[in-house]
Image (cartoon, rainbow, N blue to C red; front, side, top):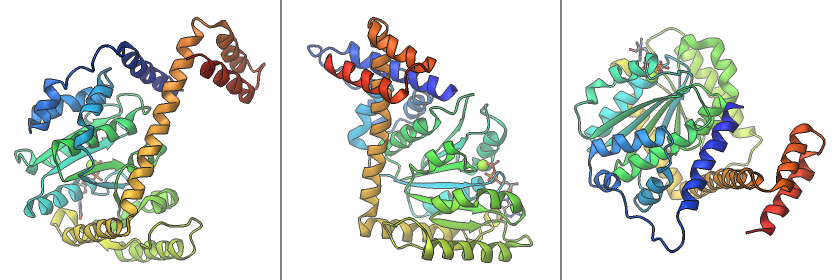
Length: 350
Ligand SMILES: Nc1nc2c(ncn2[C@@H]2O[C@H](COP(=O)(O)OP(=O)(O)OP(=O)(O)O)[C@@H](O)[C@H]2O)c(=O)[nH]1
Ligand SMILES: [Mg+2]
């Protein structure tokens, strides 16, 4: 419920913005902040991220202005159960990327935490080796009590970091709820980190994780049970790969690697696997195809929001529309008929 109210609010803000801009008034120039951000100002980047995170009304303008500068970053997702060592892995991966000369933007999302603190604060501490490095930018995000816009906000922050010029953007997220899956679907390569001791939670998460994982890494391989877990995952991965129900756009069997992130063991191999996955996606054309369909999914979601907001706004002065909405909510009219009525009425009047 909270999600759909969110959706409406953001759609209203979005439409409000679009409406205020009449054809004779030229679109306002790029804001100073966007210009500064594109010129490499980290403070401007941080402030733009805050605007996106808080879904302020100028987000559509920001995204429009940065759009020509996006599409260059490679986006890596790291997900897995709480405490699997995701932040430590991201920290070590970042060190390896920095050693190769690449700069890195990091987004740590914790959908379960309503406040910026706790685990997210932990992320800051674990990644503090990089806080003084101008080639690394770390941003933590919590839900602030609503999951509704978190995936979209993450997607928009990826765009900001991309436009800023980071060739690598790494997104860390916990678990596999719907919001996390929506977040992970926006990355190019997904690393799933598991640990020997997570036992039951792995079983519960396996279905969802199998679907999104491009690379598995069993972290804390210094602990008992790592080899058994790796064998178990390999078996499932192979089964899924050879007899999975869905047709695949690429022939890639997710490798299952071992790591001890805290000791920087296996991290170079993890980066190698990521680079191999990236090369495979790029060479096969799948990267382009996937990004295209991702953009289409985002467009469709925005269209639904914009149309819904338009209908709600018009219903305030159009009794027929208001009646159709009310009848559908009351249950006196079925929703298919209501939609047919609403769509034809709305499209008939520009
Ligand atoms: N023994 C061992 N401990 C590790 C290893 N890697 C990370 N840790 C420890 O595991 C704990 C959790 O690590 P994090 O990197 O915060 O894990 P996380 O998955 O980001 O945790 P959340 O973001 O809270 O879900 C920390 O105390 C790390 O030092 C490892 O390879 N071996
Ligand atoms: Mg973490």
